[in-house]
Length: 135
Image (cartoon, rainbow, N blue to C red):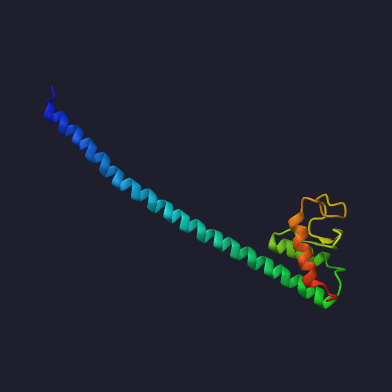
């Protein structure tokens, strides 16, 4: 049978081991969270930089086309090629939404971009205003 002193020492040892475990675990969890946050931030920054580089390339190619040709006629091949290269859907539209060139024309547009594509339409309008051969 264990004496009261033995039980007291055993409880004291358990308490010390628990505290020691917590003193190791808490900083380890904190360091792990910091490493994950830094790695995730670096990955996100890398992804954003790659997207920006890709979009800049597409913008440059389309701008060059507009300057050299003065019109969007025949831009279908360029739009498809840029879409394949970039992995983006590229749609050139009139202000009213009618499609001039679309890298994925079978996506239910019926000649107009769907109302749910407001971001594409906004970007398209911004791009048209910059690329317009009539400026």
